[in-house]
Length: 128
Image 1: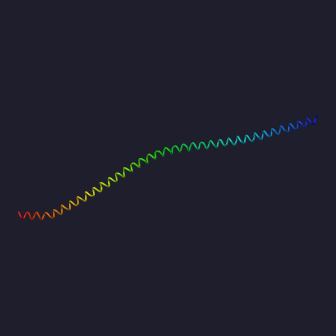
Image 2: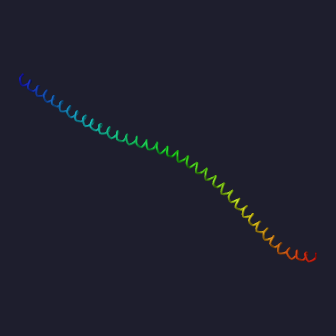
Image 3: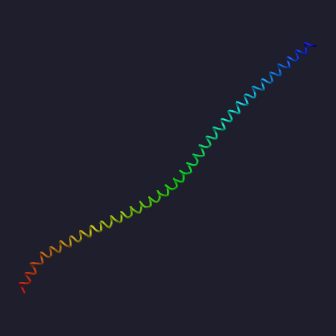
């Protein structure tokens, strides 16, 4: 009976140590997983901070975009007005040029008439 007891204790001790060993391995694996999860959480927090910064920059870019679109619309409106003014200016310039040419023709005609009428006046004066 003594040997049987000894064998039973040895078997029990072996199973106990196997269970402790298995529990230690399991705990080590769990701790490794916890460490990996902690590192993953740190990485995700860093990525989240970067994404928040990108979102903030995107919001600023969108606001800048709205301002640029408004400025672009204003510039296009001014451009249309300038083109209209240029068209009117070209029209006035053409009219002014035509007016200058008309004056030149009138002056030339008057000079020609002066040249023609002077001898006529002399002739009429002699007749009188």
